[in-house]
Amino acid sequence: MNPPMADSPSAAPISLATRLSYYEKLMRLDRPVGILLLLWPALWALWLSSGGRPDLVLVWIFVLGAALMRSAGCVVNDIADRNFDRHVARTRDRPITAGLVGVKEALVLAAVLTVLAGSLVLMLNWLTIAMSLLALVFAFTYPFTKRFFAVPQAYLGIAFGFGIPMAYAAATGSVPLVAWVMMLANVFWAIAYDTAYAMVDREDDLKIGIKTSAITFGRYDLVGIAVAHGAFLLTMIAVGVMTQRGGIYFGALVLCALLARYQVALCATREPQQCFKAFMNNIAVGGIVFLGIMVDGWFRVTL
Image 1 (cartoon, rainbow, N blue to C red):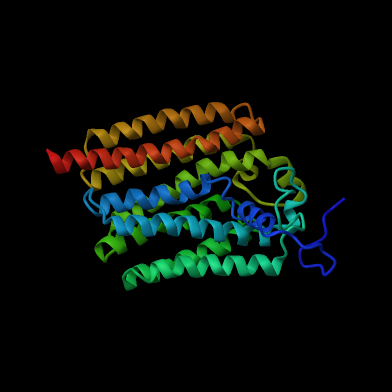
Image 2 (tube, rainbow, N blue to C red):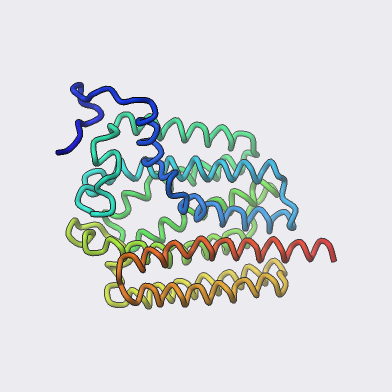
């Protein structure tokens, strides 16, 4: 039997601890992978734009901002998808579609998270503030692209990549060409990892009419993932050339290429658990790129 809807007057009182646990699940704080996939590109940009010595205040602003905005984005996503989530095995227990958190309550939560993130951005320069407004538009409109866009993962890559120009704007007061090249790399990366993620729900998504790259690519899904990873790595090589990176950085990209090959092998089974494992492996990809940038920069500064 379904629990009473949170907005229903007949709903029984819920303890604060239980309510907070619903919010935690709604914001996906129990699954921080999304925070990391949003944060890694911003950290790449912070380290590159600062010559390997970023302002620690800026680092903390972007870390906290990533956590807050990813949480707000998850809330907005679940509001938009509440009528779809109940038909997907992986999402039918999410708080809104399960009736544990009401839509109005969720909207207030999203607003609070957005205001908190905005208060961090107000500490930065006007260009970063302007960039943050664009980032907000992409973050909150992304859930609706699954209704009409054949590859919404590309739109997700833009939304998740806006931390890159924001980082350059915050650190240098400008957004050079290399920032946009890196953002393009992030679009390719998002197509790669989110296609693997979409393969988990492909059968359910086909039934309810959601559009994803896994459905659009069809039997060429593995090719799509491989090509997207390849485009990501080639574009990051271009970033390395533009920023005059050394062997450590390019060595890190070689490791990422091996992980990409591993992910394609996992997805080749087309088993949901293996596809999800491939998706999760991208935490390591983003971390290796970051370590490559950081260590390469450290050697450039100290030698």
